[in-house]
Amino acid sequence: VPPPNLELALKRFFDGVQSTGTFEAFVNEHLQKLLRPFISERLEASFKEALAIYDRLLKQFDVPGKLLPLSVAALLRRCMIARPNYLDPPPGFPYVKPTADASEENLSDEEEKMRRLDGGMLARAEHFLQVSDRIYEGTAEKAGINRRDIILDCTAEDDSPVPRHAVFVDHLTASICVAVRGTASLGDTIMDLIAAQVPTSDGRGSCHKGIHDATVEMLPGVVEAVAEAAKLFPNYTIVITGHSLGGGAALLLSLMMRHQREDVGKKLPKGAVDALQCFAFAPPPVWSPLEALSRNDTRNMFSFVHNTDMIPRSTLRALQMMGSAIFHVDHAGISEADCLHAILAPPDDAYARETIARADQAVTESVRSSQNGVIDLLDGKSVKLYDRLYIPGQIFHLYPQDAQRKSAISQPPDDEAGEDDGGETAGDGASAERRPDDRSDPPRARGTYSIRGFGDEAQQEREMDSTYRIHQISAQLLADAPILESDFFALDHQTTAYIRAFRRLKLPEASSEEKRESEEIWSV
Image 1 (tube, rainbow, N blue to C red):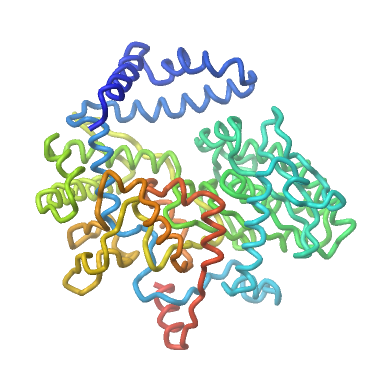
Image 2: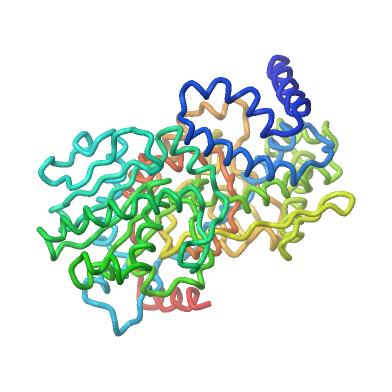
């Protein structure tokens, strides 16, 4: 139960929103008084644009609630933690077969190696992950890049409407590297929040507006810098990389260069645009529809998602789905007393598990009710879902094999962990084919849910010692994944978490029979 001062603060906040009429008006009246001395007029205009987007989103779910908002959120958390990880691979799936990103007859030997998920490809990906991490240091030189290799350094903070980035020559990998920094300032955050879709200038599709507009501003300078480096090193490969916001910008930069290959190609060595590689880590979804992209557009574009990282799942549509889940749980006929009991009771409490199962059923119903692209609310009110945004190219999911990171809470010893009829422990992985709209058995709690659990360092150390696995997932699967699936949704997003996952990654040897079975699964 929240302390009285928190309840009072929340009451004052919601009363303030009601008195000013809208969330947008409330923020304009109060919060901007604090921000205005520290932000420019351009940032203030972008901030208002972002507020307008989320004000419209909140208005869509402006319906009377039956339970306290914090109670619903806590119950939904218990429900989501009890579910299997949405992106988990099928059990016993040891072999990863990346799908082709180019026609077989057009693949060079180097591209054939890049298609295979082997140690060499992963070592290259980890190298550029380290680059994406170091670019946060402030300047290219502080990131450890030799001054003689820097072609363009736009890493210093200023009022320009683009992410911080640098272009330099990486002799270790024989590449001309474009590194884009992730979110590290107020301007970057506002850029992330302007998540509405905007049509591309060539009409091929639509993009994340904030990142698209910034990438359009970046493109001319980046192309000029890359062209300058290519004159000195014509045989080097162009690599664009970034983490978080930088990953989304890297994906769009790659697509823009390929969509404008005739103009861009005139400034670069022959075939340089087609041979371009992109390594994006934790990128937000930035493109729609996938059908508008050819194999040549997405060739050698690799994105990596760590466990339950929320950013690669974050779109306005996903927020609508989360609002729908909250609405359905709120109207599932669960009393406030039952809700609080389910939140605070131990996992072996039968009545609490029954309440969580009812909430789980409500979440499943929220998914089913939105299959036609519309969320039905009270009194005939409905919400039309936004179009999906996707991550283009090949997507790989990194996940801990030994202990699924679902919650920042203590796990019971092995002899205390409950077993189901099949003999699997409650902490075992589950099939990716078990979706929220196709569940045959009740949710299983993973560990002991305790108030002190959020400070359990021993549990986090056990998680960090896990061996990591990797498998390829589809952009469609990721686009439908829930945003908040664990307590580690923010920690899983950090570059340190990605680096740890790569270092603990193990590629199992697969027999010819396992490879054949895996290929059959992927074909399905």
